[in-house]
Image (tube, rainbow over all chains, first blue to last red; front, side):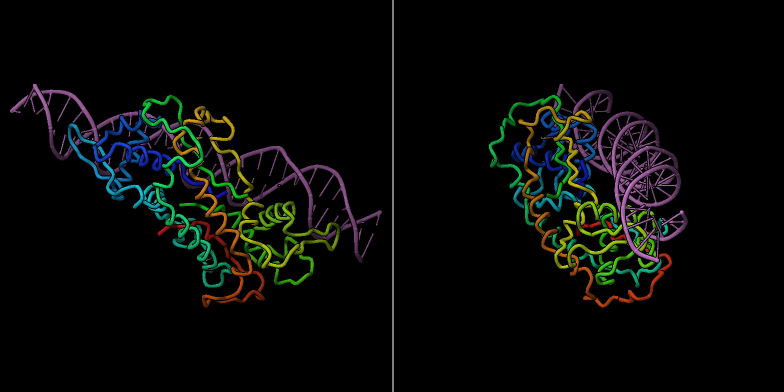
Length: 160
Length: 160
DNA sequence: CATAAACAGGACCGAGTGGGTCCTGTTGAA
DNA sequence: TTCAACAGGACCCACTCGGTCCTGTTTATG
Ligand code: FES
Ligand code: FES
């Protein structure tokens, strides 16, 4: 349930990895090497993050990306919004695919708002630095570059 | 972002509607009429809910469904789990689609757990009765059956 | 000034999944 | 005995998303 987009997961990985480079600009191929995520995908993610202002880009030769803010100032909500965007195309919003024509009589009209809000709050409360520090005993050998088949993907939030 | 399955939305609508029938058994066609959700889909949802123990079924002629517990005892998390199930098929769980072979070195290994937990808590805290009572001024004419094109679908939780 | 490295920002395609439908039992009240 | 209604599958199609690629544009560097 509540499937999180895999791209968003990648974004978190990339951002955390990027933070380990200090303030130095880092190229997307380098990040791809370090994370094991295919390079084009890393580039795609970084572009989105840059557009959202989470990372700053340096164009031209010797260019690359740099964190725009420290990790502890980036809530996961910001990352998710940057990647997946505030997908407004609900059936309720625009009548794109035969949307609900009886909005004012819908039994759950606006009923998801509190749920929505609660989740949003939870996602805003947790920042990226909390996903970086080793707290569950995992191996943290980030210095070893090129991890072959690493594929971040705790991309599903299973309930219970 | 965080797209909620549409079936889960349907389930909430059906459950709330079902609660308005008191303890009387109600057929799925009746519920389909009342909610506007296509009948086969309602049946599908009800089967899942029955399997999860959220509703009780009465087989045979004059059969139907009945709430197994009052609304305030059903957290939305239970509904979502009943419908979508604790989808365990993460890339991390089974190596189905080239899953991560370097789980122990993965940078975000287990990092989503707190987020997961926070969302789960939020979803457990909110119960179905909170999605029923009119609190935002919406029209609540449940007694008028057959709503033509009603299509529940606040199925996307947009963040910010 | 020429060159190459690296980002920008699209278009594009294929696989996977979930919404929706249908069909065949099985149950049990009338 | 009959029929309404649930049980529990199988099934198909549309849509989305992950992933790739291509063509600019920018800017260090020699
Ligand atoms: S991708 Fe499965 S543990 Fe990191
Ligand atoms: S389906 Fe859009 S308001 Fe209910």
